[in-house]
Image 1 (tube, one colour):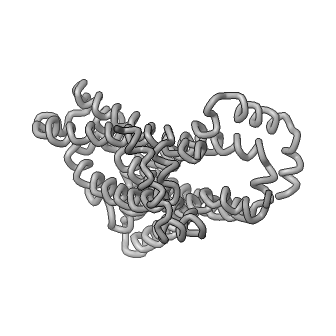
Image 2 (cartoon, rainbow over the protein chains, first blue to last red; image 1 turned 90 degrees about the horizontal axis):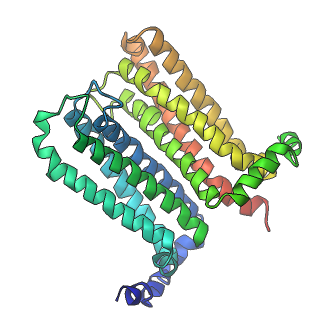
Image 3 (cartoon, rainbow over the protein chains, first blue to last red; image 1 turned 45 degrees about the vertical axis):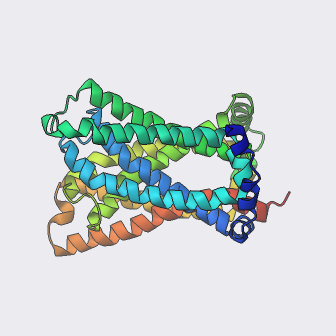
Length: 166
Length: 171
């Protein structure tokens, strides 16, 4: 079933949208890609502080809620920009991307990063008042922080690898 | 610039870089990812600091404290990016030293680094240096605005090097 989905002719139809041709054949593609790199590095650059704080490595004089409140909106804003620019690039080679192992890994790692973030926000974060200012953070916080770092680095590696396969 | 490319061509630096890029499995995307992670630290340090000085981000962080805290991360990231970038530079010097976009990248990078260095040194000598009085605050904001633009252009130009190659070095 998954195979049918990935090799569906619908993906080719996407490649044939007028906008796909417009992006793929003009300066728009490198332009979108530059914005994508800037947005993606901003996502990781801002999440990095929250993760390092959860690990008790950096920004320890700030409470976890403060960093969360001030940095996560930047990460989300940049993520939205990265998604739009990413989608713009995706449609130019949709059929090739969906069967590209690097692209599949990227989507998989993004989902894992999302699940880790959801677990942190809806489970761990409920008891934030107990460990908001703690520098020597609990193992649970260290695990979620490290997972986030590793998963986002993996998303970047897979994302960069997409261009080496297509 | 072409002279540097000439010097590097067939040097042991080029041989070494080409060997690594061709023989270590996955080395090009891995080293590029290291380079991009370095850019992420640039975004998380100097770019966030610029946004803080402009009053756009992380309002609870004190400018002086934030500067001395994030700048070491910037210097390490730049050192790392110099090394990861050098593999590609040494491997194909003509691709870079004869490419005007690479020239632009360096021309944006040098003032960006100098501004960051200046901002860091002043903050290190006196923690509240950039917030002491109105002229200082406005100087800091001007520096932050220019710095922000320069770092964005460094990243942009970096990405365009590969595309301009098709324009300047048609296969």
